[in-house]
Amino acid sequence: MTVPVLVAVAWPYASGSRHLGHLAGAYLPADVFARHQRLVGNEVLMVSGSDVHGTPITVRAEREGVSPTVIVDRYHREFVRQWDQLGFSWDLFTTTGTDNHAQVTQEMFLAQLANGHIDRRVSEQYYDPTACRFLPDRYIEGTCPHCAYGEARGDQCDNCGRTLDALELGDPRSKISGATPERRETEHFYFRYSDFTARLMQIYDDKPHWRPHVLNFVRGYLKEGLLDRAITRDIDWGIDLPVDDLGSNKRIYVWYDAVIGYLSASKEWSMQHGDADAWRHWWENDESRHVYFIGKDNIPFHCLFWPAQLMGAGELHLPDDVPANQYVTFKGGKASASRGVGLTIDEGLALFEPDGLRYALAANFPEQADTEVSIEAIARRINEELVANWGNLVNRVLSMLHKNHGAQPASTNRLEQDTALLRGVDETLLRCGQHLHRIELRAALREAMSGAQSINAYLNATEPWKLAKSDPQRSATVLGTALDAINGLRVCFAPYLPFSTARLDAILGPIDGWIRKEVPVGTDIEKPLPLFAKIDIDALTA
Image 1 (cartoon, rainbow, N blue to C red):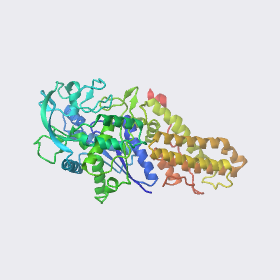
Image 2: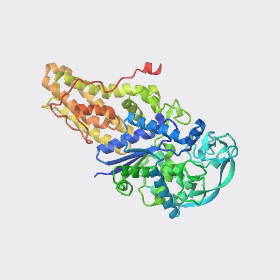
Image 3: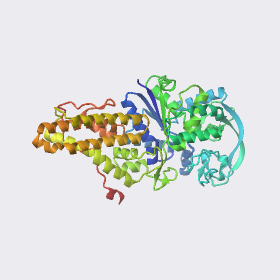
């Protein structure tokens, strides 16, 4: 049965270049999963976009002396270019700066207000006496009350991952002036997240397929009980409130509106495709499947706050899985755009071919634990695994077929070892697909590589290069069988390696399903070029 699958991918702040930790943590896993879901015949809608209301944007704009729009435009263009270079298969990559997103956010706000899940409260927030302004959470840094990390932000600690209230920070300081901020009263709208603690506890009692670290994090939060949070701020960069109760200089705050982007992007995609109601097929359909690809620092926003907002607005589809990845580390430190730790995506693309970079990161996805990435480790994976195993296999079979036959020969009188190889590839396809369905992307890639090793072992056992002289017909059968095996196994690699897959499509025909197909007898086999370039590690690290 065809299933509508929403692939919802974390929205990067358009405040600076993204690094390989972002790529491995959220964006590449999403593309691999979406490509597999399309191959098995499901209706995929993969959406995301640049988050343009994040306070890191206004912080950077003030530091550079430009408007936030200049920063947003610069980095949104960079993201789009990088996604194209990496072969990402977005259905829509937009921004939270569209009129559509503002309208959807305001509609959700009004629905929640009408349903009694938003109210007005006077509370204390930090005020910078030097800059003469209230400070949004990310304009404040201080000491985390949970782990004593000295550079925690006002909304979240990068070290322990806990969400925070800025008033909890020890030794707070303004990122604008460096001054110690003062507590002052201000009135804001609050979302009543506490209304949904019990319902969410019930939901997360029945998620046995979720990653343990995600469930443990969520259940720990719920045990303490969700706190109501202010969803407006005293700022002039953000979405306008649809009501005027609080007066001027109030805006909807970024971490309330950013997650609404998954819904607004779905509606924008629908309008672009001429059916304004098409989004309902994913969002008002019990048979649909919603999978959110994020890093573990975003778990509370996607597993707690966003489901609560969805329930507060009406009966929209809740997340079915949130396979949040752990962190990627560089030389022992967590990759961080704000602190300049780790290789940027552009730096990675300057050093490695897109498929090579995709492969090396996918083989090291931080699915269950933090993983270490380095230039040397990426290069070794490309050389020792991608080039030496899969790339060499494809090249040697195509080269022998070109040299000895010029086309795919008829594989007559196949022996048990020939049919066993093809059965093994079919079983690999099945296991690989099962892993991908469960979002076990590293395991699926290991299955594919194991399949390549089995074809190499078959060639080494049969030695078709020797049979070409002593038994040409048997040589033809062996090589034809090997190419049929490769044709099946390349389906497993297709979600990971879009560019080399397209090159093989030009030789063997397009992949149109999660199944092995025989290469038609007589298919022309021209002299092949290597699929992947070997990396000169010494030159790379000199």
